[in-house]
Length: 133
Image (cartoon, rainbow, N blue to C red; front, side):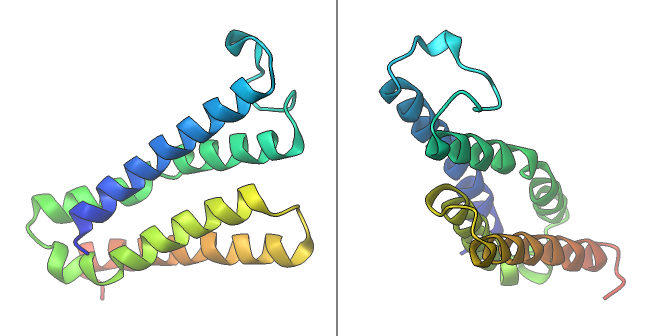
């Protein structure tokens, strides 16, 4: 999977989570404009969906910037393509663990591991862009 396809996948995953969040809010039976942005007025699942959605948006800029720089330089094959699919899978996995599992210690460790994988990949990409590795 190319870096461009992964970038589109990251955006589409964020959009998919938007629809999940809207569905959760609609099923709660309140007016759509009455919800708190942090989700603390929703069910436990609704709160987790809110956080997973926000986390995707909060962490979209970093991989997008690196991938776009590599694309502009025509270097995605060398710099980002090799780990792009791993990045996308770890992003989706992190969101799913966040939404679907109660905050047990093992699941928090899984989620943190997936988050760490993403940031290690960003570091690798950044170092490659700078010609350090």
